[in-house]
Amino acid sequence: MSVTTLDPKTALVVIDLQNAVAALPGEPHSTADVIGKTVELADAFRKHELPVVLVRVSFAADGADRLTGRTEQPARSGGGTPPAGADQIVDQLAGHPEDIVVTKRNWGAFHGTDLDVQLRRRGITQIVLTGVATSIGVESTARAAYEHGYNVTLATDAMTDLAAESHEHSLNRIFPRLGESGTTAEIIALFG
Image (tube, rainbow, N blue to C red; front, side):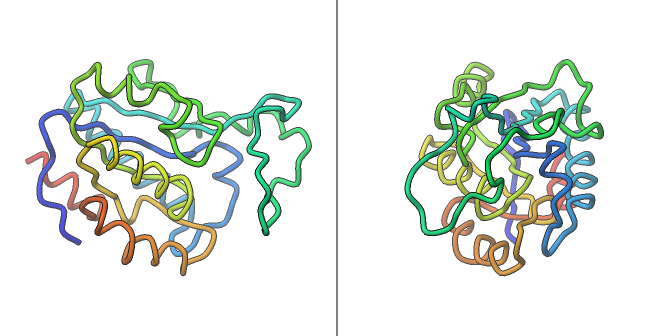
């Protein structure tokens, strides 16, 4: 854990904390704990008048915009129409009109969305990432953020995965090459 600073223009970027994802079990942190830690961070960012970006994944009812590449592991969703409200941001984070909502159709939040435009127009130079799943949506977004030239901070206790091993691999092997990591409390303490 080596988080050192927050740039004056930092945004919180929350990955996939929506109804369908919140229902999944998380490892090593429960999704309920991740939501709670993310709420703490969002409250701190809003208090300091810094942007909170809520990223959700959603697809057309006919599934025509879903990823279709050949893989060895079938998609978890199994196809079909998701239940009503599955792609809605969880109640604990929703309801703040000043927040930015980005809809993605890929693992990462940059490709095919207006996330980069939303951040650059606000002069953002750093992002703090939270969400689910650490090794998929969060890691994909962290990689793209780094490639786009943002300083990246990863809130290690405000993210979780479907398997603890995947979470730990991202934290210990990937994230040190992309940015700095710290707990929710360590990040909030940087506000002074």
